Length: 155
Image 1 (cartoon, one colour):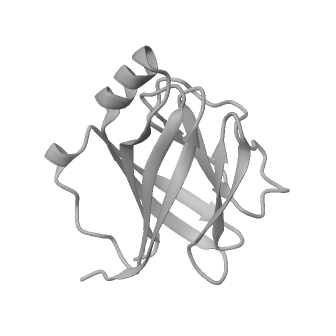
Image 2 (cartoon, rainbow, N blue to C red; image 1 turned 90 degrees about the vertical axis):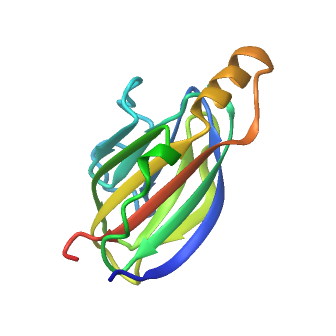
């Protein structure tokens, strides 16, 4: 059975309905964030980069990041508005959080001591509330919640 290695809580600044998780050592990435960001795709991956589509235009999302030593237990789909899985490659073992409007955040997510291949599952709740806030008041904080789970692709 897989075990949780580390857990981290971050606030992601969402702008223009999106934010990203990108390899921290991003100098050689062929498509850096936010180039080619696709509206309408909940989770989109590029080499060394994950784009996450929010339901709200501008707000702060609450993000819990978990790193596991194997595939974590499946999440109950009734708890989440959206879920998706994909692959992720890291050369450094660290991932930076990016905002469409503010650029790279100070937060860094540590996956491992060095690079490697990962699977990632992203789950999101609070999408309708984030959408309603964006349409009415403009911004919200922590209304949209994400769970991002990484585990070694070889697990």
